[in-house]
Amino acid sequence: MNSTSTHFVPPRRVGIYEPVHQFGMWGESFKSNIGNGNMNTPNHIIIPNNQKLDNNLSEDTSHGTAGTPHMFDQEASTSRNPDKIQRRLAQNREAARKSRLRKKAYVQQLETSRLKLIQLEQELDRARQQGFYVGNGIDTNSLGFSETMNPGIAAFEMEYGHWVEEQNRQICELRTVLHGHINDIELRLLVENAMKHYFELFRMKSSAAKADVFFVMSGMWRTSAERFFLWIGGFRPSDLLKVLLPHFDILTDQQLLDVCNLKQSCQQAEDALTQGMEKLQHTLADCVAAGQLGEGSYIPQVNSAMERLEALVSFVNQADHLRHETLQQMYRILTTRQAARGLLALGEYFQRLRALSSSWATRHREPT
Amino acid sequence: MDKVMRMSSEKGVVIFTKSSCCLSYAVQVLFQDLGVNPKIHEIDKDPECREIEKALMRLGCSKPVPAVFIGGKLVGSTNEVMSMHLSSSLVPLVKPYLC
Image 1 (cartoon, helix red, strand yellow):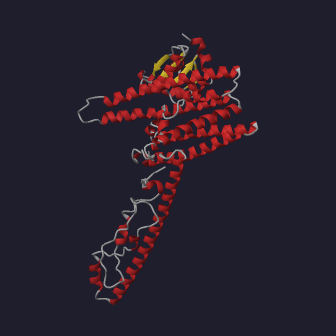
Image 2 (tube, rainbow over the protein chains, first blue to last red):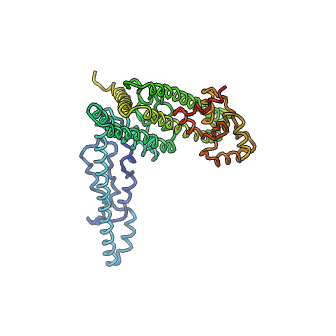
């Protein structure tokens, strides 16, 4: 992967706080011990926030001794009293010493953060190369950082990154055990863990929806190919069944009947929610378009639309509930081994979608 | 509340909704899809809306709408209806009331 640009990670993501204002504190009043006051204006601590991150921290940070103009006045008032001068000098030395310590601590902090940043970038590159999901805020196609500034959403994105890692690990494990020998009890444990893992995602999404429902609705945390198939903030339950069903070997008559019923009821539930969503869209559009368009004032329309948006959170929750129930019913209908095979198939399907997104994103970068 | 009891038994399948609630509409659509013609009570159009809401909550609904009654008994809200439908227990319940 030929990624040549350094992605600028917004400071908040790695704990580097805006240091730009901090250098002012080194401009406080102290006098250099050299000569009779070297009144340089406070020098800038150069913060490498748009350079390529390499191992050379700018050496310009080592200066920064400064004084301020008003020192002249204080000097004048103590010129008659030698004790006062001594005390003043001692205070200055002390202040200078403290300032140097503070600066040292700050530079240490910067160094640590920089190293962490380099580490994160390396991890990201590695993950991208393997076709894994990489956080939206640092994605090359990012729409900007505004979405990741919401702490609830930032937390969700991080959690989701871990979720995908765990998902990939579980898929590997399932693949390994299904090709080998494993007893039903252990297999059942794996299957139940996999199910719990999906349910955990729905729980995470519920919190994220409360933080920013539009974010969840538009699938911003997902890769582009996954977003293409999006239905109310996630995959279509009926798609899930379509992906799974061809993978089951022998189904009993009862299983066939149950699966048939599940397909139908899942589709009906999905259609009902889709129509409910359409109604919400119409209602919202009417709200926003109400009154006079073109008059330039729209606060009441925006406010009434805001009230409607609460309903969107309910829809996201209902859609996830439907996904939850679909998975639950499949688990009930199938044997443990069939369920394991199904979960493996489903997991791999999403992996393929993510790999597709990756390939698509990098297709122009390959040398032709 | 007597009014709620009376309203919920008016027909085989009764749904309490609000005209602004799109999730209630989704539930309505589902029942229609199953071949049932439910009786819809838009409680926000009822002068006693607040009392009805309180009564529904007291009966055990986490949200006042949508509240689904089948055969005069409270089945629940959207969650319960969806779960029942996917586990194939909704269709047998509404069978006596198909159009």
